[in-house]
Image (cartoon, rainbow, N blue to C red; front, top):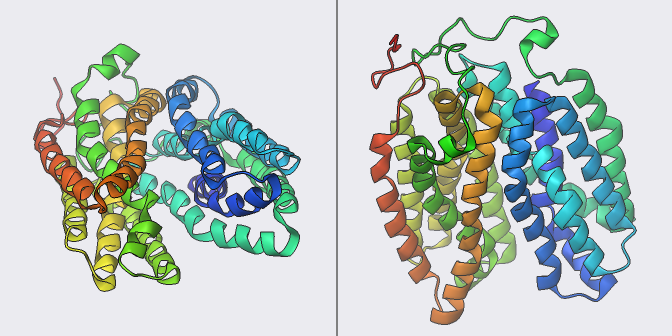
Amino acid sequence: MIGVAILMQAFTVGTIYYAFSFWVDPWMVEFNASRGYLAMAGMLANTIGLLLSPFVGRALDRFSIRSIITLGILLFAAGLVGASMATAAWQIVTLYATVMSLAFVCSGVLTGQTLATRWFSRRRGVALGWVTIGTSLGGFFMPPLVSSMFTVVGWRTSNLILAASAVLILLPMVWLVVRNSPEERGLEPEGDGHCASGVDSQQPASVTKWTTSQILTSRTLWILVFSMLPCLIAVNGLQMNFRPYTEDLGISAQNASYLISVLSVVMIGAKLGFGALADRVDHRILLAMVVATVAAAVSLLLTAPSYSSLVVVVILIGAGMGGFLPLGGVILSTRYGVAAFGQVSGIFLLVNAAMGLGGPIAGLTRDLSGSYQPFFYSVLVLISLSAIPIVWLPPPLGADRSGRRNIE
C-alpha cells in the first residue's frame, strides 16, 4: 500500500512540480511565449491545487480513496495528452490551472498521507515517513528522465509516453492494491491497540467528528500553521530564487544543481527519521527541532556563505523541511482522528498556500535593495517567534501531556 503511494507521488508530483521547468524552454520556442507567462502554468497548478485541497480532503473522508486516486491519474494523463496537442501558450496555462491542478491534489501528498493514516496506527509515523519520500524521489528521478526523453523524442511525444505509462502501469497498480482500510482486505488493523505514545490507536481518534468551523477555530491547527508557515515561506523564497541567489555568489549552474541533489537526498533521510521519531518522542520537541534547524540554515544565509557553507545550508533545510511532512501528518491525525484526516489536512494545506508568497517577496526584495539579506532577516525574526506557541500544542486525543492514556 505504501509502495503504491510512493510511486504515485513520485510520478505525478515529480512530473507536475519538479520537472515542470524542463517544458518551459521548448514551449517558449514552440509558442513564441515569454518565460514568465509559461511559468504561470506551474504556479497555477500548485496554487489552485492547494485551494482545492479542503474539498478533496473532505471527499477522501467520505468516498473511496482508490476512486479519487484513479480520477487523479486519469486527469494527469488527460492533461499531458491535451498539452501534447496544444497550439498556443494559453492552452497550456489553462490545462495546468484546471485539469493538472486537480490531478495534482487527487494523486499527490494529501491522498498518500490519508492512505497511510488509514492503514497504520501504532507505526503511523514510520508509515508517513515512508509515504512522504515519494515527492523527494520524484524530484530526484523525474527531471533527468524528462530531460532525456525530450532530447530523444521531443516534448510532445514525451507527453504521450508519460500519459500512457500512467494509465497502463500506475493505474492498474492503484486499482489492484489500494483499499480504504485493512478490513477491506480481510486484515486486522495494524498495531496492538495503542501507540508508543500511549494513545489508543483505534479509539477515540478514529471516530472523532469535526466540523469545518471547529477545525478552523481549534488551537492545534493554528499552532501548527504559525510554527511551520514562516519556515515554509523562507524555504520557498530561497527555492524559487535559488539560481539567481547562487549566481550572485559566483556559483556556477552546475555546482548549484549539485546542491539541489544534496537537498533531495537529505530530505528522504529526514522524512524517514522524523517519521519514526514521531511514534516515540513528544511532538512538541520534534516540532521545535525542525523549526530550529531551518532557523540555523537561514542564519547561515545571512553570512554571504561560501559554497561549502551552502552545502551545510541545504543539509539543514533538507533535515528541517523533510521533518515537516511526516510530523505534520502525525500531529493532525493524532489530534483530529483518522476519520477527519483528509478534511483537516486539506484545510491545513489551504492555509499554508501563503508560503507561495516567499518566492515573489524574496525576488522583489532583491530587485529593490540589491540583496536578499533583508528577506532573510525578516523571515528569521518570524521563525524565531513561531517557536513560542509550540509549548501550547495540545496532546494527542486520548493522552495527557506525559503521553499516558487519558481514561477520562
